[in-house]
Image 1 (cartoon, rainbow, N blue to C red):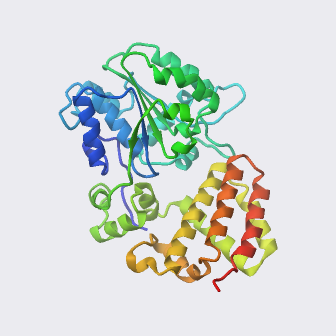
Image 2 (image 1 turned 90 degrees about the horizontal axis):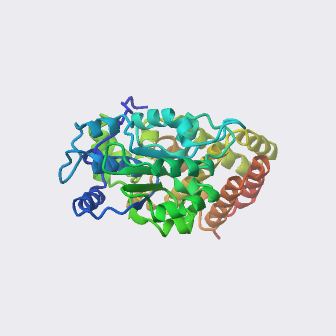
Image 3 (image 1 turned 90 degrees about the vertical axis):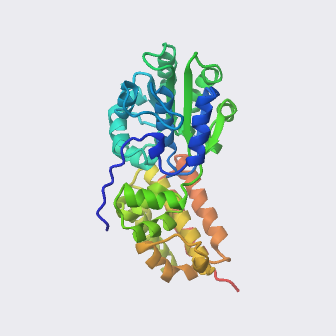
Length: 389
């Protein structure tokens, strides 16, 4: 495991990893006074959407901004750096701590500030782990709507604009979304909504229709290499390898270089599942299902997403796509794939993908985890032994 400095603090636009063309469009919209009152930054995990949204909000609010960036030194920028600007507001998934506490973002704002101050590159699983979610799914509850309406009903305190950043609007309860429709369509004067989404297909269509889309692509390889070399002091050759394997996902690269514990656990579970299924060890599969059902639902969903990625990489390896640099594996994952990839082929890849995706849907719908994972394991026993004719 490499020893690196993982601290990646809040940044100005010029310090966001990659996304140069998007940044140019955003700064141009400010210069031309064409900033949409509701925008949705949509893109894959690890692309830096949240970092970009915060840096853009800082740019809008900066007292001495240039054509390309905020100054980083004015009172507004200093408060943004501490996430303490009175005109900057956040909404994000939380959970119910108890029956007497309304589940709203303000109750978790200190943990949120700590998380972003360490690094604005993180995912839902990492966030929920920080706030101690166990077997619940993080949501933006209906009680949040009243807080948002109250905050945005006030005039800006210091900046020209109030900025409301909603992280993962796809986790917004339908009742919350419906209460905010009118506000997003016709917000108070000098108010900007910045929604940051990884899966817009799960966002209420009426919310989407009221937002200007800003599509955030995966980070380009050159910017990834530069970030690892300069920000994290990773040797250039290692940085180049990480940039290839991460395939535009900076968060994945971080987890690879630090041997992230949750990623290692997902890999161990994936290996066990496939080995037990191939060997038809039903009792072991039952114990495996019992064990994974003890983790929280978000962790279970992350495992299923991880497994789908592993299936894709093993299939590409079995099809001889390494020479085309279309396989994105390294370390233990690559070592296992070299032994396992021949078992993933054109005969079973679609059935395997279907079963893992179905399990994800069932877990998301609060299905009984023991039943869902045991059913998945038993189905894999049949599917994994299918080989091309």
